[in-house]
Length: 200
Image 1 (cartoon, helix red, strand yellow):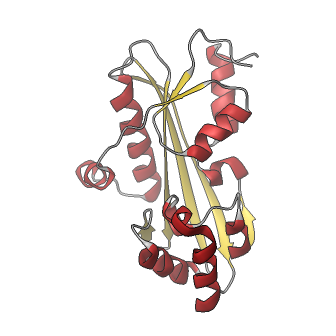
Image 2: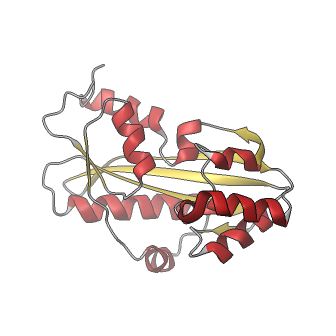
């Protein structure tokens, strides 16, 4: 489906995002940006979770595009908000446990942003918002879940991955599946068709 002369560059180390793009027929080169995300977030003075996700996805894309002339570079980021409280990826098992306890029995919002950059210019950016309602979880269930997922709980904001056993955490999910996984794929493909990078 990809007809651009060179593969898309993904400025993210997310294996889930790489798999989504590859499954859609897009050749991908993975080049993680490795940024100080909390530092960028503070300097940008982003006011909302959606702004934070947008700023971080843009920073990742710009950082890699600066070293890759004429290449399409995709940055992506997610933030999670429970009311006014914002979550980042948990740093360890204890943090993942606390996040899951905080989200248990409540509905939160997940903001998934993508930014496409070439030669320092933003070609496309998009932020999706999804709502997820978590079941009421016992401490015993949370510990069992964390035993099963291991380090995987540290790979995503909120400590869950709905594409695998993380689906057991939820009672209702509203929104785009791909965006929940971290990549609003349909808006991206729509733009890439207009750009002439994929078959129209």
